[in-house]
Image 1 (tube, rainbow, N blue to C red):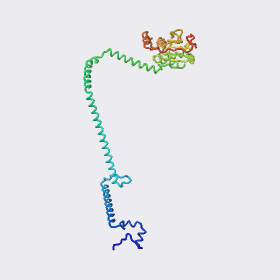
Image 2 (image 1 turned 90 degrees about the vertical axis):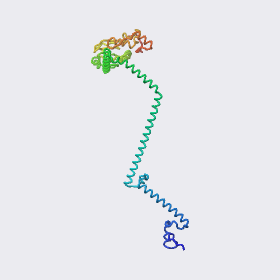
Image 3 (image 1 turned 180 degrees about the vertical axis):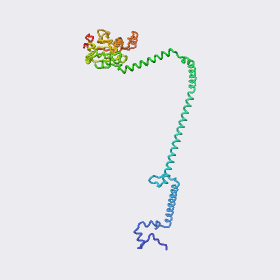
Image 4 (image 1 turned 90 degrees about the horizontal axis):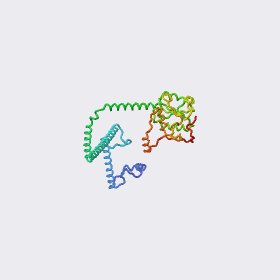
Length: 343
């Protein structure tokens, strides 16, 4: 008679009642109800699985003990000071290995670049070797030729040195004088008031050219046009303009009766006066048609500026080259023959 098992009791016994009330009880005997062959097969599978689990656990323990296990995620990693120290050590080794690989790659690239440069230089020398040899010979010949004339450079002419020093000193003086003139307002035509007239004419510049004008007269605008061309080219004199209607005291004092009027002062003393366009027009029938050079020549005649009229040969050369004399201005108003505007 086969022995009975208490794992699956039947009947009205207490064990049977317990099993009936506990549905997990059959797990305690998984082979209940199986034949002998089926039980042997299931047992063999179970043993195999158990051995694999035990082997895997042993390998995992060994890895943790020797520190050769893969780095775990922070959330799943084991805790403790020993593991943290091991983890930091492993990270340091990984970083060091990465840096070493990068340095090795950089050295390799540098060596490769050097080899390429050397190869290019070698090819260039092979290609241009003959040219370089020729240049070297020419340079040596040139050096030898220069050596033959070195003694001429070593022998300094005292007279030539004196001329050079004098010219340098002259240029320095001219540059200093130019800077001084610009600081005093030379180089442009400036409009001043009655109160500024005496200081401008007596306290700063030696030569002062003053244009007395009125906005109502067209000829005053013509005079302004020419003066604006002359002032930037002659820094040796100061060019000013003053509204005659706003300076009645000096108009009366200087006895100005006609506009435009151009008066030249030397240290505050009048040395020249131009009334209207007297003597500037080439054709008396066209008194308003004249060139800037005519006015420049008149101012130079007072000594205020330095100017020489171009010779006939120079004029002919200008015409041949197509250079037109600058400064011709024509009045828009009807010409009645009057020479000047009365003030």
